[in-house]
Structure formats: structure tokens, C-alpha cells
Image (cartoon, rainbow, N blue to C red; front, side):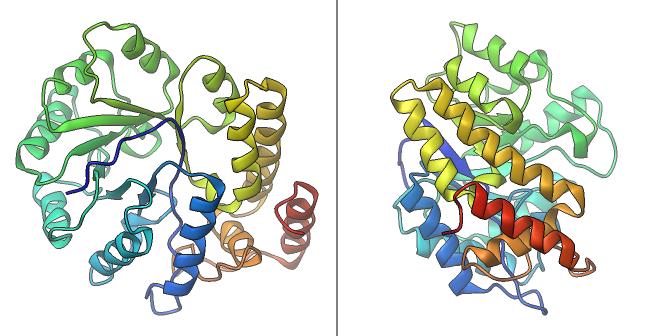
Length: 297
């Protein structure tokens, strides 16, 4: 298992390009990963929310993880999503990964119904004790219906195999950062895209989101600006990313994302198999926006 350090910077949640039969389009995936590494990504998440972990075919799941691991080839740390609705089902996913050389697995709480805080803690405690990989918590209350609390998190941080959290909860992060007993090996990944510039100025230096993948130029420039404490530059490039994101939301997020990734030379279906393509009007708007913000020459 790799021991690459989780450095400060941006971590893209990779989209997963598939064909009409749900099979990975390997060439597009390779292009996407290479774009991210060239843009300066400090690590990657394979099959998170943007990567449609919940809708990937079971037989494709280990093949996609293997392809990502081989293409990344230790150039950056790699985490793999294992989200599901019971410990045993998550462990099945972990077992399917075999002995891949990755930094860890990322799991949400079960998302079929809302858990009590006690059972949420039980879920991650059992998973951490059974997982052959380090575990990273994905706090996603819009899906799981239960936001992580301070008490839940500090209880779970006693488990040495839980190595970090991805969350959009700035208050929770501030509590973590102020706590003198926080483990040095516990990474905090902030996922609140709309406030990335504020977070960077506040010293929250690991940021994870799927929009990085379709905005390699602006992602690179945003963190180049951060490196020289150019706050105006950080905000300028974040605004460009948000402009494209808001255009995605205007019609259908994942279908619009599929079209945008195709424009970047990474074609495939990044949306689920029952979704229709975006309209011609949306395609024109997306193309114009990506030209305007510098993602297309």
C-alpha cells in the first residue's frame, strides 16, 4: 500500500466516462487523469459522487479502480469510493479492490434511510476495524440525511484506521482545526466549492470537488494564485469555475458535465444510463462559457 503524503492543494473527484453498455472508456479516463495531474492536482478520488460510484455496474467497479490506479501510477495519492448501505456491502467493494496500491477508501454513511448518531458511529467503527485500507469519511448529508456532528467525529477519530474526512461543513472544520488533540495523520478535505476562496484564506488547504475535472486551467490558476497569496486571483478563477457549475445546474448537472468533458477531449457518458443528453441550446451555452473562462482555446 502506498504512503504518499496528502499534500495541500486541490483534489479532483474524477468523473467516470462509460460507453452505452456501462463499460469504462479507458482512453477518456486516461486523458482526464493526465489533465488533472498536469494542472497540479495533489491527489484524486476515483468513483466518488461525480464518478457515479452508486450507479457503476458491479462487474465494472474493480476494473475502473484498477484502470485508475494504473493510469495514475503513483504520480499522486489515490482514494477510491466504496459507498453502500451496510458494512458488509462496503466490505464487498473493498474486497473487490484486491491489493491495489491506493491511499485509502472513501465511504459515506448508508443512504437508504436516516441513521441515528449511535448507529452512524457503529457503522464507521465496524468499517474501520474491518477494512484492509485506511478509511476516509465522506460527510454528505444531502444524500445520507445525517450531517456529521462534533461528537460523532471525535469519537470516530479514536479509530486509528480512520484517516480523514471530506466535508462542506466549515463549522465542523473550524472545531477540528482548533482542537489541539487532532491527530497529525488525520486529513481534512473541504468540499464546499462556493467558499473555496474563503477557505483557502482561512488556512483550509485541501479542497476536493468534481468541478476541478472540467476546469483544469482555472483549477491550476486558482491554486497558483493561492501559492503567492493572490486572493483576488483565487476568487477570479473560482468565479469562473462557479460560472460553469451554475450553467450545469441550469439544465441537468451530469449530462451537462458529460458534454463539457467531451469538449476537453474526454468523451463518454458521465451520467447514468437513463438520462437524456442536454439540449442544443445548453450545448451552445456550455461551449461559449468554456471559451470565455479559458478552458477551450
